[in-house]
Image 1 (cartoon, rainbow, N blue to C red):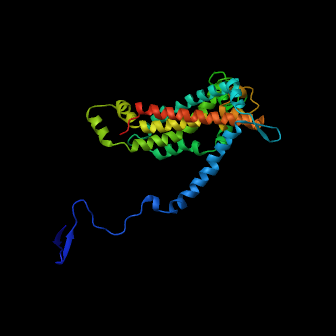
Image 2 (image 1 turned 45 degrees about the horizontal axis):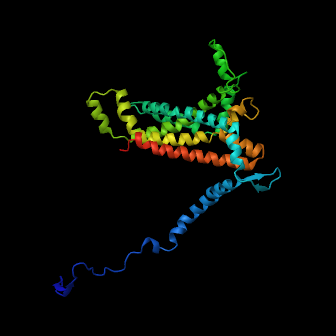
Length: 319
């Protein structure tokens, strides 16, 4: 131990190498903060537990039971899942859901092109266009479905009336197998495209301008700049939109239910997985079987989302 003089002339001790002088009260660790963090996180966790985790747990439990007409349940094990594996309606509903989701994904490149066009320099009324595209998304799907149901009516619909005036024959858009599903998917694309345009427009506005200036100096045209610069830089936003589109596609119900209706002759052949769940659980009052189908839907959504996150490493450009 050596001595050293301080500024006021007093003699102080210099600590030996490897030792520290005490610097006052030590900072409390995270684990010693007491119950204060729980005071703020507790209400949120309580809400998640009551409204999300507990219903999921109960649904999983109900999927192993058989319910009576007047209530009451009994344990049946894997009987509901064995029935699901051999039910042809489940396979057909799965195919319909996948077809709808694939058509819904076609709206992403359309929204990307619209966002690029609306971000052109000098475009007037840009905010008005964005508001018009976004308006269907914030409107109630049931109200929109009723309007489109009138438009696609096979007897007095506006669409068939317009086709007749140009010499083309009309169709029963909502009562023809496969055509009804494609029609519903087209309405779904129109309904969601406004959200995609807003997301892509915000992403385009945040891109660095020096990259486009360098491309202009190299003589790159507008299409080449869009294809080689804008699209690669927007891949994180495209990935996000793809994920939410697939999840929404597997949750298709209200649009299909209102447009077609339960009395439609092709409703059984056009139903989605969630539509089949509604029919089994609430119309046929087979809640155990419906719960098993809900668990399968949840598993499929989770599996597809995990696959998407695994594949995004190959094509998403993180700048």
